[in-house]
Image 1: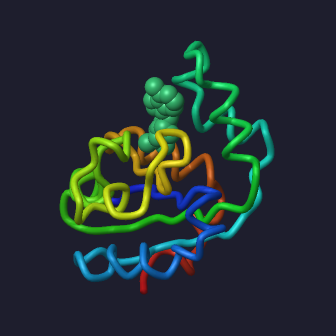
Image 2: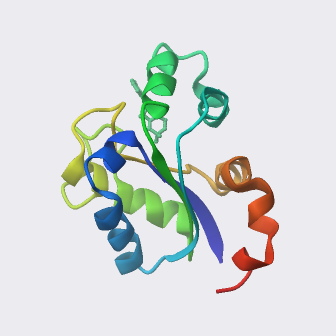
Length: 143
Ligand code: CMP
């Protein structure tokens, strides 16, 4: 079984979309393994988006991600990374199909509501970045 990292970004939290987004993952068949409501330190936001540090939008992205609380989650399921990306939709909400989270709730590429890992390797990296020691604690091993 695969795990993926999903984060409801500040605009998703501000707009009261935590419930609807969690419902979509549950309805798809995912199992929620861990969840953390948190206000990110700048350093964690910079680490999370490290691969984009040379992009022109990096600063705006980090400012945005630290502008309010986020909801960080680990979801488990078959082909979890690919299935999560399919229900999340394309990065730019303008191009995301209706029926996807970004297609239904988003308008802006920075404030695109939710982040989902783009590969199993990124998922493991992002899970350890946000949940580190907690993920090895017994409460997360079995439900
Ligand atoms: P996310 O899936 O969280 O991963 C990287 C984020 O960078 C992406 O969502 C967008 O919010 C942001 N992003 C990607 N491309 C651009 C772009 N061209 N301009 C601004 N932000 C971008």
